[in-house]
Image (cartoon, rainbow, N blue to C red):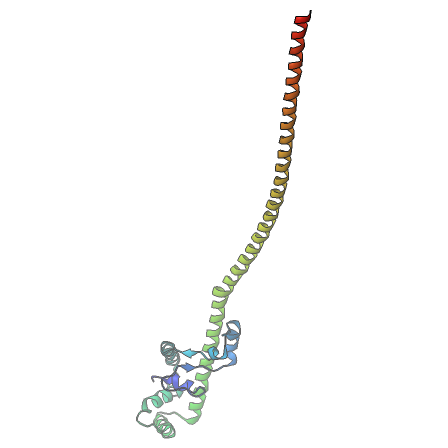
Length: 220
């Protein structure tokens, strides 16, 4: 049953034998595709790696095996079709041969179609569960971090506003400080000039008195 998923993808995607597979678009993937959009149409048809292909193939095989219905049905039909492909390459002939073999075991055309529809519903249910799990993971792992980013952006904006306010206060204080420094220099200059003038006048007054004392002493 190797590469059955690659064959299934080949029904709606054309690819070369060694070319990466590209998935098509479907409404079921739109919810996540809208939430996590790819940047270009080319990326939207993202290639599936061999590792992913093998993982998904094992997943669906396990899903069918765990839910296999009693008696021959579509699952046995599908597996036998895969097994005989190398021996009976013509698909129509292979379908006829496989159906003839399984009909001996009680498989009818109606049961084949009915069980095929059941397996299809099974895959669709699995897809819905996967999308729900992906949505839940997005809410836990992505939305929570988006909220943290929003909170940090607000914190940065608040801090930026505080920085602007403090910067304005610093500028205002620096301007006031320069004005006060100029006033201090002016007052110091005035005080120095006044002191110097007083010292000169005081010395002159003392000199005058001393001179008068000498004159009095010599004249009287």
